[in-house]
Amino acid sequence: MTQAIRTSEVTAVTRHAADNPMVRELLVRLQREAAADENIVTEGRDQGSVVFPDAPCKFFLTATARERARRRLNDLRAQGESATLEAVLEAQQRRDREDAERPVGPLVRAADAIEVCTDGMSLQAVVDRLEAMVRKSL
Image (cartoon, rainbow, N blue to C red; front, side, top):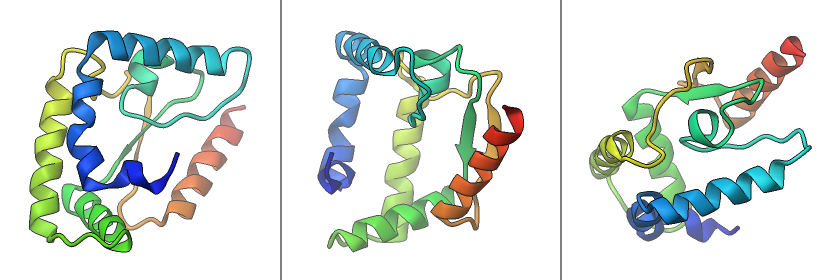
């Protein structure tokens, strides 16, 4: 995996694979095979609800729309892309709607997932908080 997957161009077309039932079925199978008999950490919009519904520890990370857009804008700028906060926010809201409405692997919070709002937290702070919660549950 490279930073190329985080570019605007890639993000704009990922829905074509994410919406394809055959692609999703293959990816779910491959993820489950990779995780077989292992304790792993995965990240993604349907990891707890579709891919690993029986995982013993699930989190649903949230942040306000503006916070998420700000983070994405920083990522894009770090990659040399130019964008505005408003454009990023609009694209993000469109993607969220599409992801929530897609028939295959929609963005839904698993009923047993712990919701964690990450506003104002650094990446390391989020990781530390989740690690502490996992260790406490073990």
